[in-house]
Length: 259
Image (cartoon, rainbow, N blue to C red; front, side):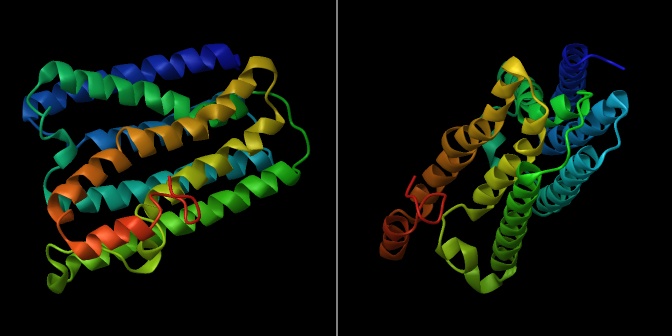
């Protein structure tokens, strides 16, 4: 059985090596299509690998790893479908042929994966086994709510875009009437839910891993999620009075907080 620190080090090395290999492959093929799928797959692999290393099969760990897998399979399938339909990811338009910048993005994702899954990795490699309690059930409820919101929001936007009459229009129906990015709301809630059960076994500095959901929120809100999408939307529809009203009346993320 690996110690938590040794397991985390091995996970970090594996994540970096896999991402660097995929960077080389993607650079040779001049594509970013493997980017999201590599990250999601590594999250699931590291989750199950540390679970195997820890050798614990109690209810808390079983549920935790099943939930990570459900999240990964669902999101991976959705993103794969999007890549097949769209053909390319506009986030990479300025870096697809810039080897250094492309390398930095792949490396950051490798590190990001460890940070995001840190509570799960620590849970899997910790030999403590307190009884399942309130924090576990609360985490599972929050995860379920987040998963439902993310699935519904992604499906609503997918169906909206498939309708030819909506060409060059922006979505403002369903969950998108209450948040400009409800899919990210669901994603944030998912990782909050996945941080609560591990909190029952963490000790000392390991509690810092509970900052993981805050990091997820920060990344989605200010780095790779909301910011580029808002800039792109402003360029496309910023002159449209209906879009201006939508922005003015609809929160960026959470349904009741306009930030």
